[in-house]
Length: 401
Length: 140
Image 1: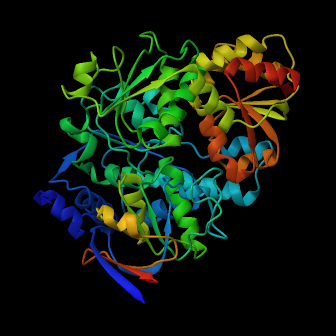
Image 2: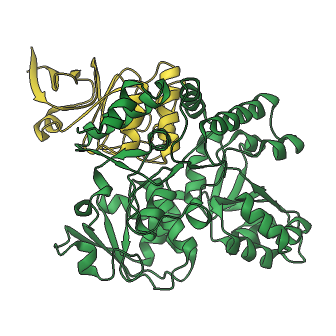
Image 3: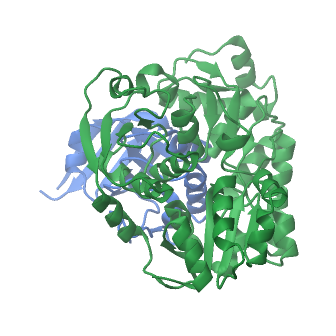
């Protein structure tokens, strides 16, 4: 693999051991994928997770003197002030979160603590080279914004932010961005929830190939696209998808396919979505809580919940996870007050897969996100998966059909 | 009577390792493997209920969020239940970076004949640095 004199200096340790380790990881990835050279990045997003491997790796880099050349945004762990005050975390767990916070501060990250940077504070332009980890973020910046990022891991994205470059392979190259499979959507896609199920059911049918969707209405919402990408990358690995007439690299079917014939054509009907839901949702019954915000809820989704809750009282706990920006907007707009009066909560800077939720272990909840249900299995949470509206109605009744 | 078959492979994360084969036709999310026992706990998974610790794990690719793949492997390593080596078909950057950082042997580009022959319990020796997979099959 060709390295510039500057890159050779980084690898040799001229900029310290931390930068050298970051370069070592990037070079090894590049050689695994047959990259010919490195290319500079202008943006990065690191899927901070506050889990053991995450803290171990970032502290190792900080101790070795690494500092980011490109300031990355970061994922949420949990809001330690909020959960300390609420008495919902142990002193040990809060201490680990504060160590993570400190390590990312020292390495030079923007402490944005949201998994949806692509909706508000780290938005690339068409063709921009970036290093995005986080399973809902990589597909969004590639597919919706038309930027170029491989499906980075939290670690490789952090190495890229430190080195300011990535190996050039995969989705950074034109020829690897063309669709291979046509997915003809015949199902009713009028609700954002349908995209959760569409995303979850497609990977088993197409394998590791880039899909182009047809039959998606042109006024599809950002939230629907967020859901689609998040679930495609929960059930499988699809860091790039195209939608004819919606995403920038698919003005028409031929352009999306790069003039080639598709390797396969898959049809998705209402029945496929219903079967997916049946397979991944717990059966209904009395629920203890509703969890929204995996990925972080947008302001529009918070508005929708608030409109359904106005003047009512919740029978089950209701949690909305979002960015600090959206929470502040919700406060200014009076949405926070409506939701809190009903007995619900908006929490910023927090992910569902964190130790602050241990009181929900063993309980049955409702969510609109298959990703939420999937990653909380290890925390013994169980979920009925339904649309936003049905989940809110369930929280008002304390049970779901 | 043991028969030994030799195949070429492509190194992703280096090293030499030997262990029993464990095949999975489904992609693997390491977060849905119990770190204390090494047992696959994902319902409906092709390898559900099987233990990955010390095995040469053969599967198409990694899946799942970039966060949990690394932590899943890290926890398995800490508890001594990481696979000894992994043979995959489709490298994804998440799995590759995790294996390099955690020093877990990872190879790809093994001939389809290997996949047709290999069964759970066969002994496999992988020399990633030399690019060789040795498959030992017991019986006639």
